[in-house]
Image 1 (cartoon, rainbow, N blue to C red):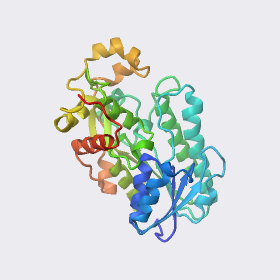
Image 2 (image 1 turned 135 degrees about the vertical axis):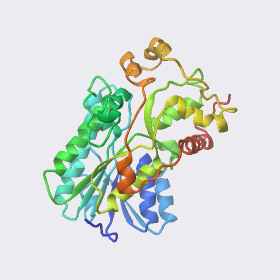
Image 3 (image 1 turned 45 degrees about the vertical axis):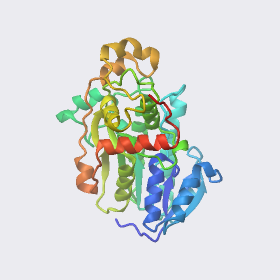
Length: 355
């Protein structure tokens, strides 16, 4: 399977956090990008992509699309051999998880991949999935065979009532494999990132939970302490590179865990303290688990006793050897990702909280 680089490449959700870097990379490589977005006329959302195109040898074309409208992507997909499907909601504060998370994720994925079955030019689809399709809580990674998650594992602990975001990612990826297995025209590769950080290309319009976590570390919300909440973390620049390699390496196949560091919120904050600790109210200590059990549910509805029990003071463990071996991805240090991310928010005035 070799992609013809003279043909256009489709990127859905092209204004997204990861997708923006991917579009920039494709343009820098001199490729033609079909950028599928909801509002091509909204310069606040697409301006940074236009700027990337001006400074690159590639060509950028916008297509107005809607995840939940059938056949919405056909025009954008025509003539493309490679399709990157990155569009999906990343929100955790939802009132109706079925309507706000599950349906957009599953139906959106089904819509794009069913169109790929009907557009004869398509040879490969690269789907942005998530480690959330592999696990729900840090305790799941500890309990996994060998004490760490691998690409063989699927999330079986999320539900509509508990961690519905993880359920949405699981069901969407399962739907993608179901559609892929129903045809032989193109192959499917999935990238499964953990928490994505790194400097956003469009800071004021990056709707990502990771930006919220960083903001809470810098604005004093976590001043009394950060929980040792076990998570995986990866830099947005490496996630974009992984997508690029997954598209163009003929031998790329299956799922790829894209996670650089097995870390926790406290360790992440500690990485920021040397450079920013004197000016910003960053957490200087770890908040005890017993205290979180008492106040967590009052402070944040997501911090249920079950969630705290399964994630706080529990290590996250993932095996990233497949993506390093097969796609050649090398990950930058945690400190660099944290500092670059935080600096971007400081520059933009998103984090103002002086100590």
